[in-house]
Length: 401
Image (cartoon, rainbow, N blue to C red; front, top):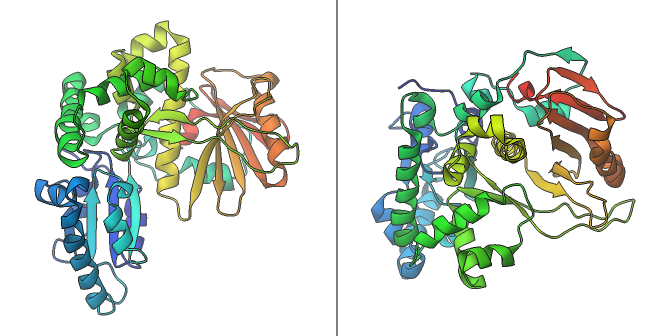
């Protein structure tokens, strides 16, 4: 199987030069071990995976008494050796659970450990480019330009887990069924101490029908028969194992004195996995159900945003812009940096646009004010064109070109 260069490689290489320990987390089967072994000589660094039974059992929350011994020994070793290593990493650890599920590790290694997140293949990686469309939106001065028409279905189906992206003849339904079974039968029961993993599947199906929408907890609990405690625990598990992620609402003091909804939006890390849960073929959806395809397209862009900001230096924050009294003028994504500067992205499943498609971005721009750097409507057409002050229409090709 061919190796696809990962855009995380450069950031990982730079990070191991400055931190004693690096924790690379991400979804199962997204290529963490392959990436580490590809860029690091086998004898140059200690490599630990938290996906082995021994490590997972030791780290289980219901056996927390075993955790300090494991992690404090690691801390002591790092402290003893960190100055001998000239600041270079002594350990690279990988895991398919978020660092938030290993609080003792995070606590004991505070100041000694960098945390990076790897996702399944991005569009840019599948096109063998190091293009980063968030960096491009932020820093590039756009000009009017024509692009070749992109095949949206190919973009989505190819930007997925390495094994199914590279094995063209693989039965994806069988693969995703096995993938989900591993998470439910192993991670949920052995690691998270979840007694009814079958309810996680019900929760995922319920969330799949609400992708890109405001999450109303009471409706999901009614769907799944869960009480609030179980719902919160199981939803946290879905996020912690990188099957899903949530985006909060933008809420800042602003020049127009607007208030914003408090609900989060939910997305799936992999849009092909989302289709699997829906039991829908994406090509059929594209041809016959444009409304649902719009939600799938939005989910795809949400996942590409997470992949893009994950490999950039610095910290970025993603939210959705949803005023309480905005007359439906929501903007899909606002990305901010540590300085509070913001770019906004609206997703449209259309091949042509007009001024009405920028009304939401105009409100977003006017509300945020001076910190608003650029607003983009990402669409399926072929032209990059300006649509007002700081506003542009960009084809989906900007994900990789």
